[in-house]
Length: 153
Image (cartoon, rainbow, N blue to C red; front, side, top):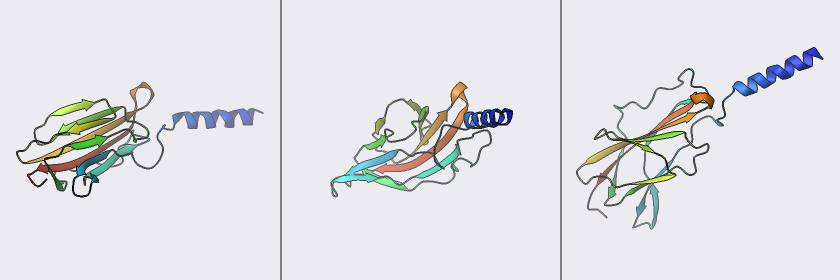
């Protein structure tokens, strides 16, 4: 009987210490523009990296190298839509950083629309955090993309 109770207690402790996050990597947002010619949404190419997932006691991967530039996508005069509503689980904190200007915005909704400036390339970084009980870090990921506006469409 003591053996069964000890085993049950051990399983409870192991289960209680494991993270709440499922899967191998962090979920990703949808970053898209509306393509008039195709009459559909088009996903913007990006760089992504799961820094840590389910156990952030030791960082598994380095963040995206800021020297590595994402492909710059011509968005014409269109806005960029970013949706977080399908991310499961939802991040605890989402930061949007305009790497070109240094501006940082904490986001708290399921989506955001960006109107990139018309004066050159802009690189954006989304930084996601998932927190557990007591504020412990369960997951962290980054997502970078670049855009340029033009008179194309």
